[in-house]
Length: 130
Image (cartoon, rainbow, N blue to C red; front, side, top):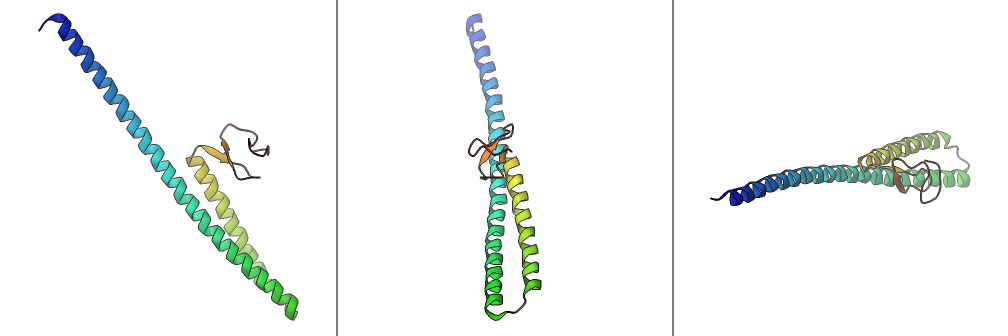
């Protein structure tokens, strides 16, 4: 084989090796990002379940308040218990949302709950301080 052909084959082999390395790195990165997105989706599903529970607690609270107004009975112990449960769930939801945002490399605006960049100081949607 002549020298020029060998040089061409060597360059082709080197280019193929470089492309293989780049493709492997891209596949690893895509796998990592897919795993992060899946983790964020699971956290969001847990947050949605907790929100559903909060709606049930709010319904219970409303029914007891109505009953108290109708009958004059004191349900303050029941209401305090439900309010504590509600506050715990809201704290859990906030924590889950923060975890999900961290997986997606974003912050969640406390005012409008939209996603913003990690370096943002103000929400680009509503202007609130982050």
